[in-house]
Length: 431
Ligand code: GLY
Image 1 (tube, protein in one colour):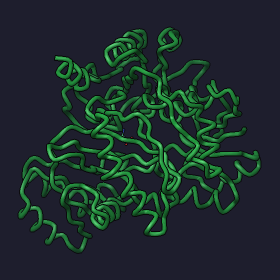
Image 2 (cartoon, helix red, strand yellow):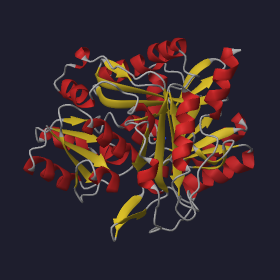
Image 3 (tube, protein in one colour):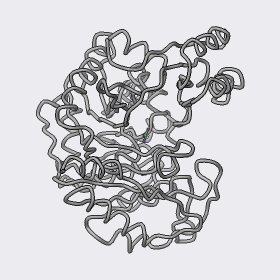
Image 4 (tube, helix red, strand yellow):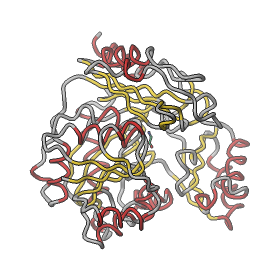
């Protein structure tokens, strides 16, 4: 089987790693990939946004199945283009990907279908004064979001009204997020702990991966600016079996039914970013793909052959799939460049990759890396994701951090508190 993975981050390395373990021994292509994926397949130098070149490549190379990692090509309509050409692809169509591509669409959709989320209003550039009046009526804390794709930076949590006014100006007047800020969504702040639930859906049926928790802020204790994610662990103890049933009943199933009813059946990974509030789970956002770095923990926990899962799904036979998870837990610590999520240096040599990944229960996923003169060097903000597997969360974290200690690059920064909330919850429960 010839499989094309689209993307170049840690999530796509995790896809390649999981697919490469299949007894079906697929031939993997990754566009554009990174040095980590090059060790598992063939990297193809096509950017993720060049849909025409990706389609031409898939046709020329007789690709049997394409898996899309990032949101941008999905929101641009890659799935529609591939399907029109008769190519099998895992991911939602452009219309279905609006669940991530337009927060205004997603919020209105949730309202139409009674899916629990924070109260909100959407405003366009011509409605600035109304937006200010709404902010003043609702008060702080409040959340101001650019409606379109903003590389994870478009949601601004505002503790005070002056901060909220500044955020509104940034999005709607100063156009800090470009056309992603054509509309602004203002929503009530939700108190609670976040969790990520992932479904793989074929329109109406779905299977679930392990629920995870991300660490979005750069600093320990959830301080400092937002990032793409500084670490993750799964399964997240906050998502008990009972809560997961509720998420399925109140969120996943009504979302799939609603998309079906509106004529856009949802196929692909559906990522529900949740706030677990005192009143139950609420949707913070939907994403139309797997999370990064969550993929680096949920895919290593998957025992079922991922090639077979994708094959059955694209044949319309998801009902034959039962996902088996490895017992225990996985934890991923992201190693980032100095300065990230602001500006950072590239081309810094990375040492210790082989030593760190030598144990069978550790995987070093590459993200912002490139090969230069035979060495792997930094090439992005989030450079590596070091995943440890263990019998429980504590052991998974110990293994991840032991491996992190073997890696070095100048300016390397990482959080030392990944998984702490999960450990605290497990300790409370065992008392
Ligand atoms: N880790 C957050 C995301 O993938 O959007």
